[in-house]
Image (tube, rainbow, N blue to C red; front, side, top):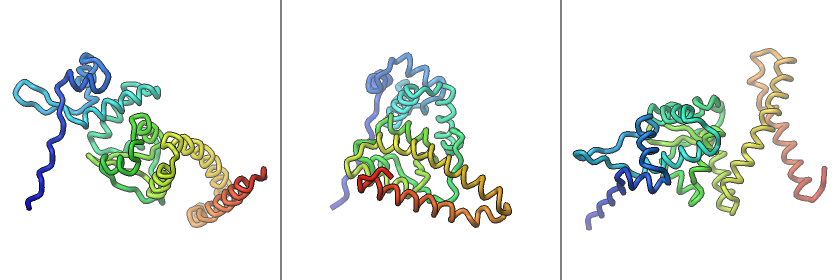
Length: 220
């Protein structure tokens, strides 16, 4: 029995796309002229838009709500189109040890069923968790991806996971600064990377003991 042909993607005319995105046709036309969304598919004089355009418009709306300017969003759009790392655009360097994971937008949505909202996507972009490579999405850390997905499966909202990630980032930066300063002050430059695992072990051990105290109800 031959396999069923996949359904064609849903397409929108300009007015239909604007309505689905909750914006005016004038705003949609402005975004298109600014290059904030990809060109539509042309069929004669009719312009057809699809789900990727709707997703981009929702992301733009979420980024605007978070205080990004249209110029900054245009830089992100350029990153999407050129395959540049979004983390680079946001001035967040790539990790040196973590294994990145390549995902399609559909695979990312499957990992966090119902939780990949424009707001959560914008938060993940702000944190530098997500980057792009052509049509694919790159999560910068397999460990963070797996842990985040596991927490969501256990009922923790993805928005809360991302908020916690932002707070952990602040403390991690402070800890990294502490150890980097200590190692550079008391070791040769060539030894800093070699001793890096020792600093990580101290943080992991302290975190483990702190969790033990918290889970036992102690105040430490």
